[in-house]
Structure formats: structure tokens, C-alpha cells
Image (tube, rainbow, N blue to C red; front, side):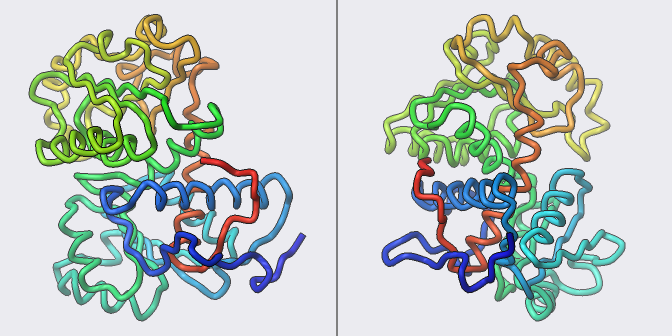
Length: 335
């Protein structure tokens, strides 16, 4: 079923409208704004995947994709998602575009703003994203930085919404390194009414500034934030167990030390024995066996592959939210 762009839905009076915004961190977005992106994402998934509709919401629009760091999920979700919506995504590697080398990052942002309707950047330093956003006249989207990975969290939240039917009141336990994923969870879960329990080895805690804001958000929204170095303590009563890589790109020289420091942090069925009866497992991928056992990773408790697919639907929902006036057309969707 093909639906013309003019008939796919427009913004309702008083509704959330994110058109033209940058998306660098979930810290900058309110609870209702995050829920809006999730509603749009769920709506697009229902209409396109389950009802077979063609919604050319991004017809005539293009996205520049800057990748300083490789990624299967970020690249494929963006390219296939933008294409499904009638747009075009252009992939730029470090060999194609030398940020801040032959041209300042700000000038590159200005140039790309003349070619594309949005810029998604997967970069080493979060400051690069801030420079891009400062120079760009189109939305800049954080595809990953050393500080935050907000597009991954959108997929995680949609996956949990689909599984549980509601996010409010859920308890999520993070077991592992204080990475950009944890930082983004800290900037969003309390706004969704979710509790967060964190187990990190000593010396691998979350950034102190991010943690300070997480405490403030937890107090503001009346949710729990628990910090420990004991994975089993953190897993007590959790609905969701989450981990990430212990050795990120660029940390390969630290691998031997990190493997020693993270002994006892592998997430297994035994970890889940103290969690809530309905507990599930998430991982942003790719994973290594030392992070999560095969038994758990391939079990019915694991939602990692629906989580991965939802990277596509949430990047679509985000792009549509930042570039159009679209409002969800499925009234029964509740986040």
C-alpha cells in the first residue's frame, strides 16, 4: 500500500514537535520528547512492517553519515531506514572526509548542511559532535561518541516497551564498564519512570559529571539509582540485565588488564537467578563470550536480536521526528 506524503499525518496542535533539533544526548530531551520519538518509531514499525504501507516521509531528503568508527548496526539501520522512507543516506568514511584535517569541523558542517538534510556522525570524541552541531544548519545526530550513544538507548527502550507493554516501574541493572551506553541510560531511564542499578569494577565507574546529573534526575522523577561493585547485588529484583563490551574500539592495548579487572562480571543464568521472575537480557552488540554466556545469550531471556532490529525503527522514528511534522497515526500506542 502506497501512501502519498501529504496524507501520512501532520503535527497536531499542542503536540511535541522536534523538527530541526540536534540529537547529541538524551540529557537534552524531556520525558515527553523521548516518548514522542518512541511513539513515532512504534507507529512506523506497525504501519510499514506489519501493515505493508509505504510511507515516503523522507522523499527528496538525504542524510550524510560520518563514520570515524565502523559499525554494522548503525550503518545498516540508517541506510535501510532512510531508504524505506524514500530518502537517501550517503556513507562517509575517514578516507572520504578528514574531520578537522584539511578543513575545520565547523566548515565541514556548513558544507554538509548544503548537501544533506541531516548529519549522523559516529565519532571518537563527543566534542567533534558539538563542533558539527555548532556549524551545521541541519540536525546533527549522535551515532556514537565516547560519552554517549543515545540512538542505542532508543532501540533498547522500544524493545522493552514491546516486551513489557510499559516502561514505568521497570528496574534495569547494568553490569560492566562505565561506558557511553551507561551514560545514556543514566540520562533517560529516570525520565521513563525506570529504576537503575549499576555494578562496575572499581576504577571503571561512570563519569562523575554524568553521575551527578543521573542522581538529580532520579530525585526529580522519584526513581531509584543504586551503585555497587557487586554484580549479584545489582541484579537483585531486576527486570532487565544489560552489559556491553569490556574492551571498546581503541582500548585494545588494555585488553589483558581489562579482562582481569572484569573477572566475575560475566552475565549468566546464575546472575538472573536473583532477578525478577520475568527478567530479560539486552546487549548492544557485538558481544564476546566473556561478557555473557552462550547459554543466556541464545536463550528465550535474550532480546538482543529484536533489540538490534529496533535500531532501524528508532533511527527512522528519530529522522522523521527531526525532519518532518509527522505525528503517530496509531492511537492505541502508549509509551
